[in-house]
Image (cartoon, rainbow, N blue to C red; front, side, top):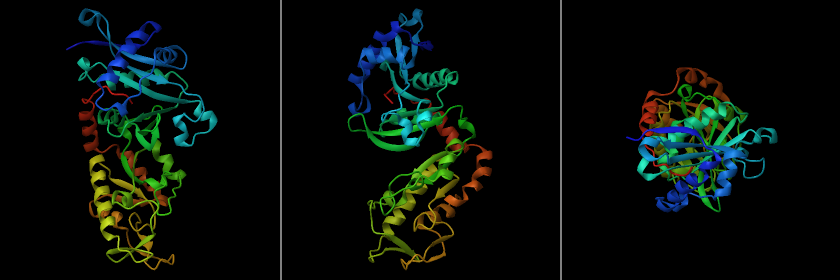
Length: 350
C-alpha cells in the first residue's frame, strides 16, 4: 500500500492539482457531481483566497506525485457565501470557510484520503480566524456525503447551486466535538424550510441554537408521505386525518410517519424536536379536527409512532429538556456506522 505525506500545497503544486481535477472531471460517475476549475482559480486558493491540502505519494513509491487534494476557500460576504444559509451577520460571514473541492486519483482511492485531507484542513483552520465551515455535496454523491456527515457536518439546506446543480449544504462550527453530539430529528419547518401547509417556515432560534450541541436531522413527514407544498390544512380526527375540505389524507400521514421512523433508526436518533400542535408532529396537544383552532389532548401521527418506538418527542417550546440527552453523548449505533463510512472514499467533489 502506498504511503502519503499530507501537507499544505505550494505554488509549484498547481499543475499537479489541475491534473487530478481534470482526471476527476473525466472519470466522474455523474457529471453533475463535480464542477472543475482552472489553474488560476487553483493558484488563488493556494496563496490568497484560501489554502489547499495535498496528499503526496512518498517519492520512493511514486515520484512524489499528488494523489489527491482538498481546497479550502475563503469567500467574500456576497451572495455566494454559504454562511447566508445560517443567517449570519456580515461580520460573521467574513469568518466563513468553504470546504470547497476534493479529488483523489482513482488508483489511490481506498486509502481514506478524503477524510484524512479533511482532518488536515480542519487542523490548519484551528490556527486561523474562520469559525464557520460549510460545503456543498450532491445528494447522490454518497461517498462525499458520508465523509462529511461522519466528520460532524450537518445538512442545513438543499439548494440549486453552480448553474442549477442540486446540492446539500452542510455546516460545522469550529472546534465542535462530534463524539459528544447526539443525532436529533427536527421538523424542517422549524429550521426555516418552507414546507408547512401554507408554504411557510420559520427559523426557531432556540431550535437552531442546538446545532452546536446536536446533529439536527431535518424531516417533514407530510412531504415524506407524498403531500405537496402548499396543501390544504389538515387536522387529526381519531385515527383519521382530514383536510378542511373533507379530503381523507390518513394514508399519506401514515406513510410519512413510517419514513420518519426509518430515518430516526438510520441515524440513531433518540429524540425529536417536532412542530407543536401539528397533525403529524404535535405532541401532547393537537388541533381537534374542527378547523376552528381548538386544541385537544393527543399526538400527531408521526409523534405517536416515534413515541411507540421509544423515541422522545419534544415541541419547540421544550427544547431545554434535550440537555440530558446531549450529556449522554452520541448514540453508539451511529458512531459505529460513521467508523464504517470513513472507509468509503471515492474522492469526489464536494
